[in-house]
Image (tube, rainbow, N blue to C red; front, top):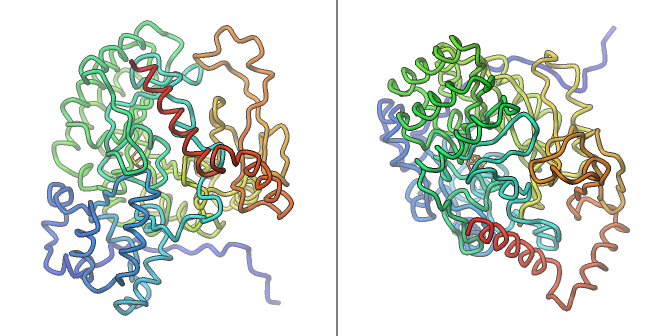
Amino acid sequence: MSSIEQPYAYRQRALVEPDWTRLPGWAHATKAEWDDVQWQRAHCVKNIRQLRDLMGALLTDDFYADLERDQAERATMSMLVPPQMVNTMVPATDTPMPAAGEDFTRAFLADPVRRYMLPVFSDRRSDWPSHPYATRDSLHEHDMWVAEGLTHRYPTKVLAELVPTCPQYCGHCTRMDLVGNSTPQVLKLKLAGKPVDRYAAMLAYLSQTPTVRDVVVSGGDVANMPWKNLEAFLDRLLEIETIRDIRLATKALMGLPQHWLAEDVVAGVGRVAQKARARGVSLAIHTHVNSAQSVTPAVADAARAMLAAGVRDVRNQGVLMRGVNDSPEQLLDLCFALQDHASITPYYFYMCDMIPFSEHWRVSLAHAQHLQHAIMGYLPGFATPRIVCDVPYVGKRWVHQQEEYDTERGISLWRKNYRTSIEGADAAALSRDFVYYDPIDTLPESGQRWWREQRDLEQADGGGEVVAIERARASRELAEAQLA
Ligand code: SF4
C-alpha cells in the first residue's frame, strides 16, 4: 500500500561551498586567499562598479540600473557584501550555472540571499513601499538606552551595542537608524561618546543593577570590534557577579566565517570561554542565517571551532522575509542544514520589523502563525525555532500571543507582562494595548481600500509614503535630541 507523502519531505543534504571561480572576478582566487579574513574584507562588494567588475557579463545592464535606482531612492543600508556571501547567491551546486545575461539575471533576481543583501528597486512594492506607521528605530531601542548604546527593555536582560558597523550590511536591518553608512535616504545617527567611555558607562550600569543577569553583546556585529577590545570588555563583564548569561551577536559567523576561524580569535574565544565556565556563566554565540544555501562547510567549521573553544552553544536568530524564507520548506531546509551539519541550534525567526521601505519583505501575522504551525513536529523540540513578533514598546511575543487581530485591516493588539525601563511609573503599562501592522498589500481588497482612504485623508501632508518618511525623520530627530 502506498503511503501519502508528508507535507515536508526530510532528507539529509551535505553542505557545499560553491565554486567561487565561476564568478569572473574571482576566477583566479586561490583557496588560501579565500580562507584569509583580510582577503575577504578587502574584496567585499561595496558599490555597483565592484559588482560589475566581479560579475562581468553575467548580469544585464537593466539589473545594474535597477540596483542603482534602489540605492538612490529606497536603500536604508549601504552596500557591503563579503565574498563568502556573494558566493552563495545562485550557487549552482546542484543545478547547472545559468547562461550569462538574461538567464543568470533572472536566477539572481530570484535568489533568496540576493533579495535581502542586494535589494533592487523593482523588488519593492510600488503602491506601499513603506507602511504608514514605519519608523526608524521601530523598536524604540534608543528610548530605552540607560547608557549610550545600552538598551534595557526586558526586566532581566540588556542589549549592549558596542560598535555601529558590521562586516556585511543587510537590506532589512532593524538598526538601520544607527548601523552602517548613511544612504541618500537615511542620514545615520552617530554615537556621540568615545567607545572607551561608553563601555565604562555600560559596565557601571550593569554593576549597579543586579536585576540584570543576561547581556547580549552586539552592534552592529562584534566581529567588527578588534578582538583585544572585545576580550577586555568581556573580561570586565565576567567580573560582575550578577551576570549569568552572555551572548555574542555576530552574523559574521555566516557572512565572514573566516573571522571566527582566525587563530587569534579562536584562541581569544577559548580564554574567555574558560573564564566563563570557571565562573558558571553561559557564553553563547548568536548568529543570523536566513537561507539554507548560506550554510556552507566554512560556516560549519566556524561554528564547530567556537564550540571546541568552549562556547556553550551557537544559536541562530533568522529574520522571516518574503521571497527569502517564507515557506515551511525553506524554513525547515534551513533549520535542518544548521542542526544536521553545522551544530547551530535553530532558535528564533523574527518577523521583519516595520522600518521604512521594508513592506516587500514583511509577512502578515497570519502567515507567520501558519508557518509556526507548519514547522512544528519535524525538528527536536529544543531546536524548533519560535517565530516571534517584536512589537514596538513591548518586545518579543510568540506570534500566537496577540490579544486581538483584525485580519481585514491587518492590525493586531498585544499586551505585556513587564515594564520596560521607561515605564517604571506607568501603572497602566500592563493593561495597555500595543499595535502591530501587517503589510498592506497582503490584506483583502476591503482592508487595502480602508488604508487608501486613510492615506487620502492625509493627502494634505503629501500622501502615505511621504508621511512615512516624515514620521521616520521625526523619530530620528527625537533620538538625536535625546542624545544631545
Ligand atoms: S549584521 Fe545585523 S546589525 Fe549588521 S546590518 Fe545585518 S542585521 Fe543589521
